[in-house]
Length: 561
RNA sequence: UGUCCCGUGGUGUAAUUGGCAACACGUCUGACUCUGGAUCAGAAGAGUCCAGGUUCGAACCCUGGCGGGACAACCA
Figure 1 (cartoon, rainbow, N blue to C red):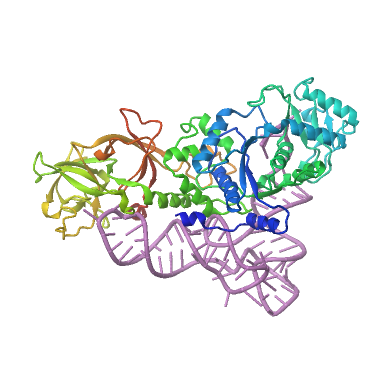
Figure 2: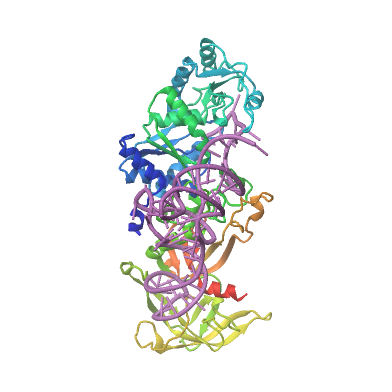
């Protein structure tokens, strides 16, 4: 619902912004989304993207895209491209404001020189072990480095030579001179620059020193004129440092605001662990439809609208929480229900012969494309003597509340006739392999003569005209609500062995012959499906099940146990 | 045994900033239905982590507990 999307919901960040605007701290709102190009975006990032771009839009401001590319050894253009693609797919536009932290390496260097001259930064020549040892513990103060009181001149000289590549990796670092006894670890002379003899994906070999996150981030925000720098909770303890740099430098001072990152039931959100799933081949790549990555959701058949709606509904707060996937699924179904064309597809076929339907006869029946949208029109579907129905729509000894086909019972074939099961044919081992049924010619759909009511309606496909396809059924990737929440067990122990089921003998109605990768449909009574973008080729059609329909029967069947 | 942040139905959020706790998801009924979908109607479910205090009045303010999270990468 578009009104849903426009419904402005307040949150603590907007309250802060309102206050800042009111008292003149800032005159406009300028946010940014600052991903590190070292992995694929996931739904947690989507929350942040929706938030940052959403705030800019709501306040008539701007939102920049800035790649936080300060660590050449982890980052890659592959990620840069996938990130841009995902943001665009989600529906946001940074216009001409695509930036990189590496754009500011020169400016950052000058700022560092300024701090050195102020006596607020120094070159430390301790080893990384020593530095870490001197840093102390959260509960115990650190001690000062023996190099802490070098002269400004010496620092300037050393720092320039660090830049010029005169030293080896790890030989020196540039540190801010703050307070080794601070109860906030981030203020214990944080490292600003480290030496890395590595090429950067954008600056090439120009730099031999690279800035750390804390040093690069706030200054980049400042350079871009960001007003509200929205980030996740783990940076809360960094805010004093963020502020310290800006204050010492006396430059434009954005306000950092932290919110709780998104957690979702039955999924993990850690980039590192997601990478582990990919590298360990537990899934089929970053865009595996079971992955919580945006590329995974896209391939699975999710719409960007549904994800945006979801992001609106979960809200923004400072407390840790874990959102229910069913809310995401609700947003998805709500969107797809309005838009997806209905089609009939039989996932697990059971042959049905209508014994009193003339052999060789064929007729075309009319079916509605989308009951939620009349403009979607109608289509014809062929009907003839031999059909397939869903094998689960037949029970030899039906449960009390099962209103589908059973020996001697009647059901309506959607958009066609009422049929009655007269005989059950089995193979040697007792499996039902075919049903012999009769139909009632008076009950043709839409004729108005169909006065008779039957309790159940099932979908079907004609044998002769059906199209073969492979359909992949997905279930949640993990069996535990919070797979990451167990201190004893690894998240991998909660992987759901049944998260993927491949059905290779599915039968589709003929109107599905010319589908294109990415096309989305509702297969009546089954769920929403989309044409897989990777596996679908000339000879083969592969559908992914995006999400099932709400299924009350499944609930009844489950509760029976 | 430090600093910072956070505690509202099962879940996620709200409460016009001190006025008797609202919405959504989920759950459960029922109606309708040629999708056991959608839709519609309804129900159950928290007295706001605990204990004090201030106040005519507290989820909102104060104090003290308790519980959860973050911080000890030359990662972001």
